[in-house]
View 1 (spheres, rainbow, N blue to C red):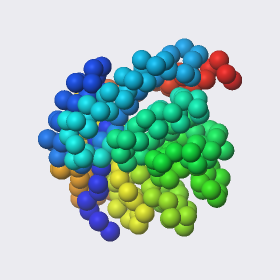
View 2 (cartoon, rainbow, N blue to C red; view 1 turned 180 degrees about the horizontal axis):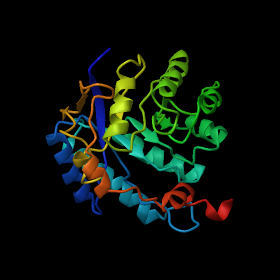
View 3 (cartoon, one colour; view 1 turned 60 degrees about the horizontal axis):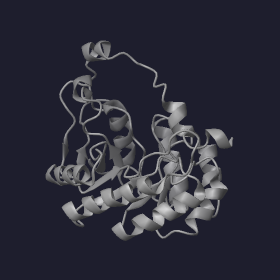
View 4 (cartoon, rainbow, N blue to C red; view 1 turned 90 degrees about the horizontal axis):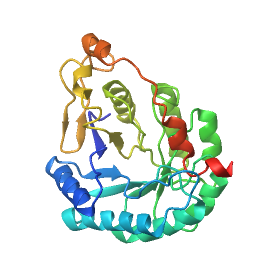
Length: 271
């Protein structure tokens, strides 16, 4: 068991112009991270699953700006958010291949695993997917040969907790598939996922949002110990962290009404 968990920074590269992306990537390297994930392509609007040529070119220029700024010192995960039509996804992945991404995440909506398998056969970049699968039974179908993805991304908050995450990891281990858990929640979910990852032999890397939300550090007593792209397991009882009850009262739960729109963007008119 390890006490240090490799993480990649998400939510830290963005903006509008290629220069914005390059500057942000430089800051990520300065903070010690060796890997990041971001969305270079504008998401399709309305009922269209087909981004226009300007949007496609703009995404490529943003990627080029990142590579020009940091060279090969930063591994890149490219998130497509599962909103593109298969033909578009294949074209976009072909265009990003020259920038040597570590993986492309959800190039198409992940519900159709047969379509994902077809895409996997036509591209030369690893596919990461699985954050929207909820149970070991979903993963049983997912890991049926051939798997539609090269890297699986169960979320400890969605898949049933630590014990279920470990079961999914064991299923993936038997198929020689590495695991890189999705982790878009706060410090509690991060601690839970990290403790599980510490015991998983096919663990690859854990997603981490260092700056989102801005009050993230207020939620626990003390702070998370992340240095040079490594999350150090907290050594307290249980998950090792203590909640700041006052901060929880200051930030009550609010439903994100964008969820359905994000998950169906580009395909509302095709259902």
